[in-house]
Image (tube, rainbow over all chains, first blue to last red; front, side, top):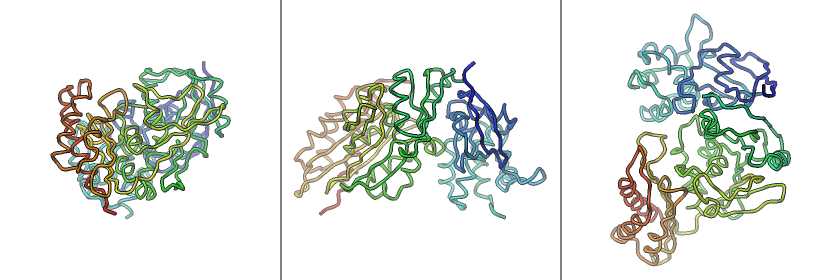
Length: 157
Length: 291
């Protein structure tokens, strides 16, 4: 057993403290230690984007970050998007309306990539959207309906 | 796809980090952005006994104007910070233009300038760009500090002149000389993928409009940043017409020996060396502002 390290961090506004192995990936920490299984793990080497979460508001890949590195930081996962269980986030609503998913496995990563992108650029062009999404792989949709969802979304209602 | 166990250190100061590096040497890896190291650890291609996480050393993260008109950039400055810096856009437009080619936004949010440069991936844009810009790197250990030219820093596949106890702490990017233009060109199958071939160029004209100096530095064609010295020599003293550039590149592409892999044959890479070199030189010369 390797030495354990204490970490304290905020996830979706809630404070958590755990003692963990330093080799624990942030993606596994979120899923297995905190039970937040909305963050999906695809390739586990930083290529597919499925595990994207926000660290201090910036999109990062949680499978190529150690959870110890998140000590003292603020993490947002897909579970943190909707205000309550009855009402989706406008971006989630737009994905539903435009049918921007099929199997849904990649969707949390797409959403978390788009949140900071749309904060900075609320009315992006199609080319800008495609560029922003270039680090997220979807094997079902062909991306067209995802791009449509982003073109139609109205954040801040 | 889980890393092997390792001892973890998160020093708060450079002194503390250098002491740890001195103690652990090649048994330890420095954890900068981790965007290459952690994937390698997930695959267990890398199994360092210890990780020295330098993300909590604030003193390594800075981006400042240098007195010579260039830039001083701390090794732990995030790639995304470099990408968005108005100062970089103004003082090092080649570096600014290069940043979007590096992987994806999520990677650049974590990835650092120094981590990328010290990793010495032959497919990375930044080492080639730093060689093209004539940048210098400050390497520090408990024994002291030394400055190394980017061109001398790279000595082979993922190999640099860094000693076991040394850390790359700062990058000095000089200003572009007067009458100098630049270009970055690459071919990749998808946005953010490793380039099949890429090239960074800087080119300086003399007052008569003839080539005074140039650098043409390739990525993904050898064990590190590869300079096309022959092409540059063929341009020297010449007015850079399309015919002169084409002739210089025909010769140069015969002297670089790229390997083939799943993405491209050696012949295709050689073709790209010629075509991209021509485009890069043409654009660099066209960008020269008359004085």
